[in-house]
Length: 162
Image (cartoon, rainbow, N blue to C red):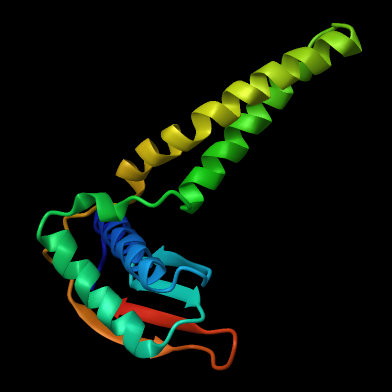
């Protein structure tokens, strides 16, 4: 079955939304556990020391809540989109601040000012960019499997969709 780029991107965005919603729910139930994920066109991989049944319940609830219109669950403050936004803005600020033939003290001052602005803007901009990297409209996504990938202290789960 040939996949169009648009269909691949749509599914990845949907899985990214489900991943975020799942992490929101798992984090609320396990506040001291670090949980992360990465999405792709077939589903997402979840990393964190949580039980399989907790993951199953959180994925199911996440999907139901997204389908019920809780679009805010698709946005997560610790998303890699936010980190990437911060890195791009900070790099641009550093490059701009150190460019040209100014005195070193002037470059340091300008760079500090630009970096402060970049860091101030990064979080809200990253959250806005998640509107393009996630898609809370998941009505055509069906959970296929949730498989454990690791055992012991380091746990991971592969969440796949049809």
